[in-house]
Image 1 (cartoon, helix red, strand yellow):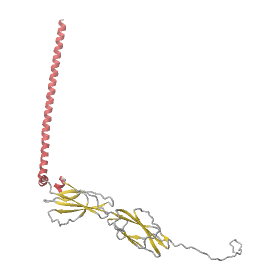
Image 2 (cartoon, rainbow, N blue to C red):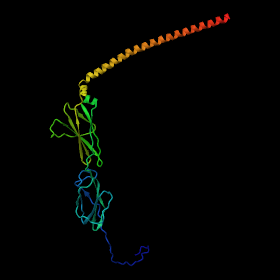
Image 3 (cartoon, helix red, strand yellow):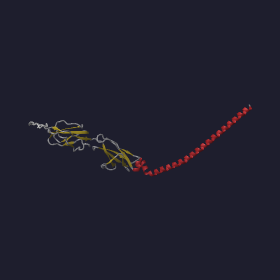
Image 4 (cartoon, rainbow, N blue to C red):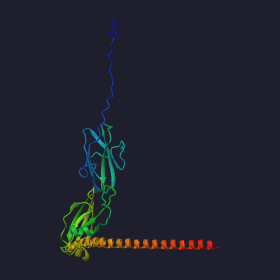
Length: 290
């Protein structure tokens, strides 16, 4: 019947239909690496090994390794394996792209990032700062250091101390440190300070600096610091007393001198006034006589 509200009869015919069913495209390939497991981390191994999972009915894979993050491999099977090893890759960022062909349908591309840095941090030279106060009060000197790393960046520093009187076979114990690092001053002999810079890929660079005992005059200051401080305090106290006494004496003499000069000026003024009066009297007498 037709759906016309009247219940009209309709002729139904049956025939054979043909349909083409396209298989579902495989999802992105699941990639992992035993040599470079974390995509956010740097590694100093430039021979990465990559592996991936293979679903049922997958005929093969198309992959490419480059420095571009959005590359899509060609629709050509170039491996049926599930592992690929690369050797001697250059430092930098590498992207492994791979997609699978399943029932002749290509899936989406999966990408795995590899970060490689095989170069240690830049060369640097530590500096020993022999600050007088630090040497006298704390028996310490300060060792300063700084460097850079172009790719992964500097992760941290470690410092080891060796007494140079010990055998050369003795290895230092390194501890993580920041700059400046306080080093105890040797009583005699020399200390060798080894500064180790490590980048975020695990590369390291070791540099060293020798720290010697303080100069003799600093040793003298250290051994006699109490007496020197007492002498400075005493000298300051004496200076204040002398300043007070001499200062008041000078001020008193200045006042006397000023008073004397004032009296002299008054006497001079009186003489000038007397002479003026005498002159005026003579002029008046002369005028009267005429």
